Amino acid sequence: MKIKFLITVIFLLFGYVLANAQSEKVGDRLHKLFILCFTDNYKDASKYIVYRGSDTSRAWKDVYDYEKEDEMKSVIEVCKRIKEYLEEGGDYELTDFTEKDESEGIWYTWLVEFKNGNHKKVYFSFLKIGKRYALGDID
Figure 1 (cartoon, rainbow, N blue to C red):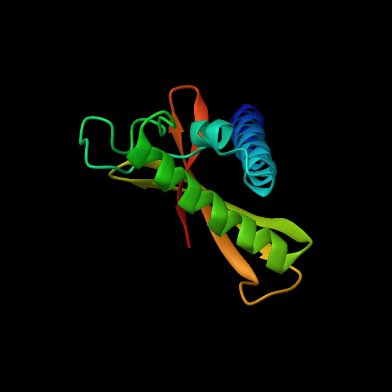
Figure 2 (spheres, rainbow, N blue to C red; figure 1 turned 45 degrees about the vertical axis):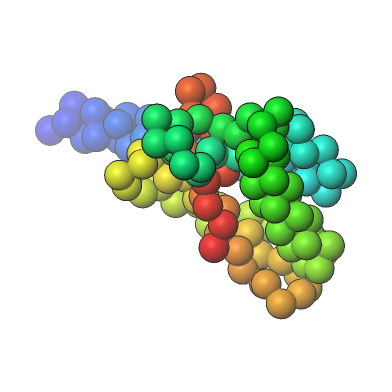
């Protein structure tokens, strides 16, 4: 009986550690993307944003290529939206992390709560692309 209990506790702790590591990695990518967008560093930011273009072989499986004009425009659009949230919202806090399995893969979502502005709560959702997390949606 005690062994079953100990095994259960170990599995729960292991799951907690994995979930915590996941949230930390995604949160770190989100903070870095915020800095890149705030400083208008679109080229580097493109590596943090999921490709959602017309090429179905790359959609939801790759990040944007800033060297391609149509993809550059998409990156700039996303970054300007993020920069607007940051400028309008001021201080922010990452308050709730969730994971949800969808057709594109597992979505890792942080709820960001801004101190000011019209958008007090914004969800930033990431997919794992290769070995890194990339922003795929903002709600």
